[in-house]
Amino acid sequence: MGIINVTPDSFYDGGNTTVTTEILFQANKMIEQGATFLDIGGYSSRPGGDDVSEEVEINRVIPAIEALLKEYPETLISVDTFRSQVAQLAVEAGAVMINDISGGQLDDKMFKTVAKLKVPYVLMHMRGTPKTMQNETDYDHLMKDILSYFAERSKMAIDAGINDLILDPGFGFSKTISQNFELLDKLENFKSMNFPFLVGISRKSMIYKTLESKPEEALNGTTALHAISLLKGASILRVHDVKEAVECVTLLENLKSDS
Image (cartoon, rainbow, N blue to C red; front, side, top):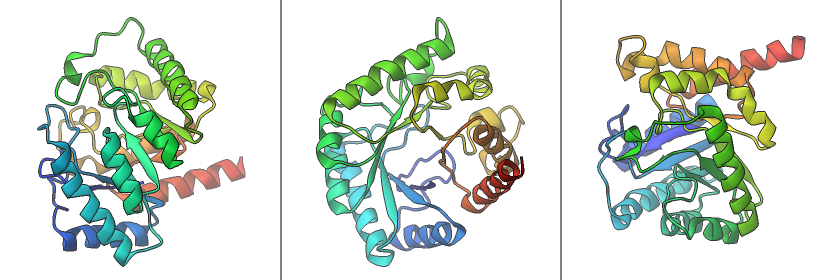
């Protein structure tokens, strides 16, 4: 899953894809490199990111989806949003999946909307909001608390009528760096939920802060953690660097086929 941010304050690409020509250039590159999905986001979820209105998010996301599908009509587009109205309009514009960082907690209409739209739904673990999440890192037991959250939220999603559910443990969301590494170490525990799970770890602070570098210098670390995630059962990688992620997947598929 290739990441295309149409925000001015993304933590890595700095919103370099806010202009249509840049969006199309990046999309073409990702498609050629083997991306299965393109994930379009118009609301920055970086820690302490600026809040934007629903109208602003819609005005960022919908034109991007329309431009992409006009140029690349076979592209599968996911929309990264926690707002049900954005999800509704995005699917009407051609998106085929909803990626919700809040797991339905920030919009009580989200589950019913997704059920009505009949599209896959990525349910992520996060406490609080992007503005407050870094103050929400006190857990009784990290893995038990996250698994309990998924048990509760996945049941609510299914009861609402969502049939195609993907879990995302939420690396970097309401978790310290050490908690992120604990989460990665125990990632295979999510297999017990019997849903595919997505890992969004690309160029995040757990990598570059640990290595005392910058997001732009975190590709090697990202690839290493992608390999670990795949070995522990991840089904989808949400990435900035598609070519390297595809190579990682290919090598590990060959490892599994030879074992």
